[in-house]
Length: 410
Image 1 (cartoon, rainbow, N blue to C red):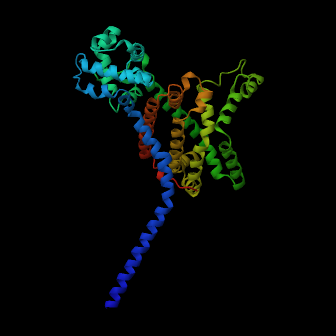
Image 2: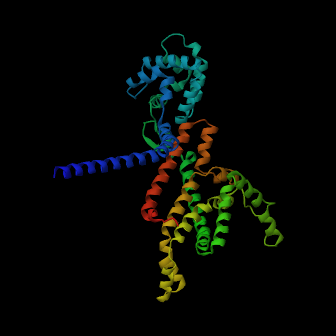
């Protein structure tokens, strides 16, 4: 009896040891992939989220002012001590070439701050001894306006929401309350709306074109199916830039399409097919079409043809059998393809920038603009965060509507 108990305990230990070994093996297999995902996906996203609210460079450039301005009640003008602190900070920042950076940052919150700091910085040598309050106000009347000190006090915090608010066409008013920007300054909501509209339109076009192609591939013979698959994958073997430039050559006034239409007598003058919304739709649909066809094809290959035959044998018309029996089974493929196309379309930059006009640019164009032209990483990050939240929200909503997890790879 004792030997049986001991044998049972020993067997249990072996089983537990075997299970632990399998867990370690699984961790060892997924560990490198998780590390790569963390380094090249999660960390950049985290940095983008942080950069959209990071404002620590301001307190580093004006440290004494950042520390002492907290004593200001926010009503009226600060006392002499605050004026003395900012004069001392400006003298150091001017020598370290940081004052212009502070001016650009504050000018984003209140237009006119850059010129104020630039003008004051050039005349700092005149401020040799206190009192500085009256001297600064005499130098520029803006130093005697409460709104400039409100912006400075808000701008010296280590974190800020002004960039995220700006991405939604919002701002802080003179009372530190969130309000809408004037109508003539409101551009980002319309840009985001345009981006979503173009992405949805391209997704619908890809679905309308990709569904019959995927259906034909799923029902065709192996030789025909393989040939169509090779033709479809040719898109991935060509550079995105080359494909986009090729569409410019094809769609331009002297291009192939207009040449054929004019030679056939259908039109008397060239159609405007490029550098507008039409060109964007055509080029983006061509590039993203495989991402719709492949998920649809995978699902359609796994659908038994007997279901439709059974429906027709029971008296259903072919179109009714297709809509009532076949089409519902393709919903996971439609959902997966639509989601892949839509998410990729949201972040498109090269194709709309080259093929579209000024009113066809999407959010990614302005992200690149703030990075390359304005060197405003915070605003670029805020637009990226807005796009990330929008994409995540749509994914959650769409994922509940269509059960993509049921998609079977065939």
